[in-house]
Amino acid sequence: MLELKNITKTFGSVVANNDVSITVHRGTIHAIVGENGAGKSTVMRIAYGFYNADSGEIFLDGKRVDIRNPHDAIALGIGMVHQHFMLVDNLTVAENIILGSETGTATSLDLEKANIDIKKLSDDLRLNVNPRVLIEDLSVGQQQRVELLKALYRNAEILILDEPTAVLSPQEVEEFFGILRRMKEQGKTVIIITHKLEEVLAISDEVTVMRDGKSVGNVKTSETDAAGLARMIVGRDVLLRVEKDDARPADVVLSVNGLKVIGKHGLAVDDVSFEVRAGEIVGIAGIEGNGQTELIEALAGLCRPEGGRVGLEGKDVTNASARRLKELGVAHIPEDRHRRGLLLHSDLAENSVLGVHYRAPVAATAGFMSSTAIEKRVNEIIENFDVRPPNPEISAKSLSGGNQQKLIIGREFELDPKLLLVSQPTRGVDIGAIEFIHRKLIELRDKGRAILLVSAELEEVKALADRLLVIREGKIVGEVDPQTATVEEIGLLMTGG
Image 1 (spheres, rainbow, N blue to C red):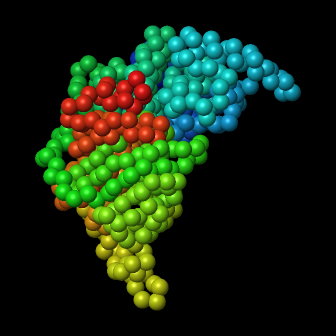
Image 2: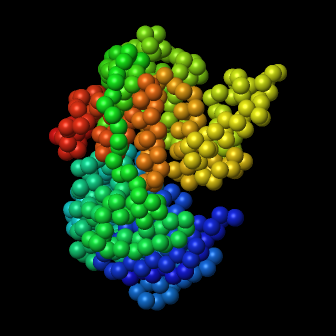
Image 3: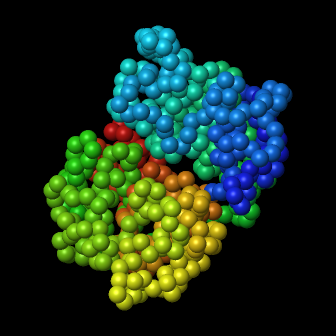
């Protein structure tokens, strides 16, 4: 169905794709896996016309095609759903789907016909999407379905999905996989870019593995396993489970009592109470948008609570600023590394001292910063947390997502915090970096530090947490033992089932 032959793409001195060849067969689900920066998204964006290759060829049904932009790709029956949804919240489902391909005349939009056509398409695939509702009133899982409909409405025969399950609950993932299987039965061809090996094994027919900008292997899914794929991805054996000793909880570090936080759409955190002790990881599981973001941001001093009390080692810090909390020993790894974690256009050295730039040893006399102290700090972070490439002078935006995450984690760990607030630590991070980040979190716990962990990855939070709280609609709806509770049981708590 689709062949990419000898694709090469460079960005300045960086070789993103190096003579990459990929063959995708009609009516299959084809997975593309690899580390951050391996070139997976780049080569698929070339297939979609988002980028143009420096050299190489693209064949569709055996015929060479010239795809210069997404309009060309759509005309050829290629659609792409990006990792971050491209939807307009205050428009309806139908209005979002027809944007750019509106029915009717230039002066008269036939929205009713679009509503009917989209409803039929939704019913055919059992997507259960109402074309007349606003996007802002849909769950993340439903928005994912809208993105699928948007591509299929334009008659896509090949659908490229970039990290499609990153923000879905376990139940939504199963429903989503059912949709992909029905699409396959209808003769559609699906390409999935993902880091989740268990999903690759569950849904795909074939797998292409990329490493360092090259395609290093193509295997039938039925002839491999998670360990084999991980070995191909990283080039060595990878520990796919979290190894840790039993926790040894000590004194209470963080106490939260009756906390209430207002979000964009009203009360986001509603009367939440819990404790985190030194030497333990307390996990919070929940579908995104159920108050986790507002909870962590309130605890990090980024927004003011509406009510309740927050204590740090017995001291009331309910309304303390982010700077004051950092001075008291609170570190924060945010869920959105671009918006909250990094200055993307600044270099690694500048990013390494965010939050401590005004304190010794970084702050020198007369308001100047010490270049020697900055150089020492950034080089320690680069070495200890394996940030690649190890160049303090490059901008943060030039790093892959996984290396951006390691830079943030290294910066916060270097504070040697009493309490670490960490959200989505491995989102968009490859298998090798996930293993590394998990090991670092366990090491911090074993040093007697308190960790509050929020993750949309249920398997991750189950593996890392010593105690697990479940949040739904801003309330803690249960506490479970992560060692004995099943993913299905936790998923039901998350969804109110």
